[in-house]
Image (cartoon, rainbow, N blue to C red; front, side, top):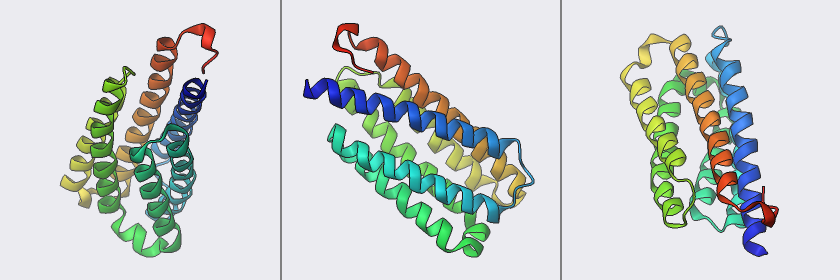
Length: 181
């Protein structure tokens, strides 16, 4: 019973996080006129909310990786919101470092999911994409806000779709009679 409740909590948070991040990605992608200052504020709020979700999920799933991602997200969100001018000036580098950190954590966590018999390839893919997007942003930080918003929007959209895909894949792995997900 405890395992099925934990699985239900994990599945729901993957679905919610996926939807929130995918919608955020589409918004950022189709509004390139949004300044880095506005992006810093919106992303700061989203990081705090998603980080709080991962923080809570870490207790339900007993996962140190979710705890680390949750704390990292909330800290980045607080920095973005409290220092908008500085954040706007350095947003490309800050975002690249965040993508890199979360991507590496997801790659490592995917192998834990594999050991547990869960769908691990989605997390691995999200981690690899995060690292690749980090290198793209670091390689071209001078191009400006439009490039950053396009890359950030694309990454968030893909990350959200991967989270939703992970929810669907794990839902299929759990027998219907357990009532999980």
